[in-house]
Length: 257
Image 1 (cartoon, rainbow, N blue to C red):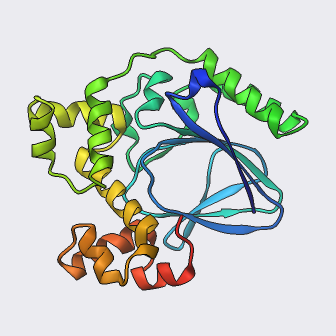
Image 2: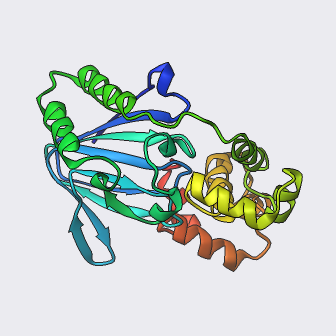
Image 3: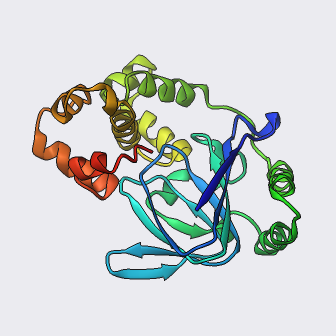
């Protein structure tokens, strides 16, 4: 499987973190752990299936994936190609009026956000494009045409930065107080913009930070304490849900993504 990342045009950078093109010449299994960004995918060649337990289901050619608390597992058939639009936190709101929290833990057809006829045209153009550069241009042009709300929510932006600065170890009550807003109003506003509760978002930040920082710790116990876990069974349960593996198995594999 070949994965290439591309930066968006300056006009899109407040809303799109990156573009990713995934090409699989051979049939491949792939796992992803939760991230802080929503993703929209355009599969212009081949087929992708999502595995849930022992069941497999075919994914539509274009899908929007909300934030989630658990890992996901996919099977790419041979000769499959996908272009992913990775939004910034809250970035999808610049293109859609659907409250982001309605997509939490969901994989939905992109036709719920954009006209199906437009999406079908984009898929055809992506398939016919001569190279990756042209495909990125097609996608950027599509997004720029559908850019409808460029107004930032500074309070939520500040909240996101505070959560990241604390590596996800923060009390929602204290966070709301520091922003001079009631907790109920803050949580509702956060869910609508970001696509999860502040607590769920902070949990993603916390566990991703632990995974990225793990090589600097002497032991897994030290890493879990640093992430605010003082109950090892709670830590292992959360980690297994997050990655689909126990901490020992995950870090033994050497794949810290």
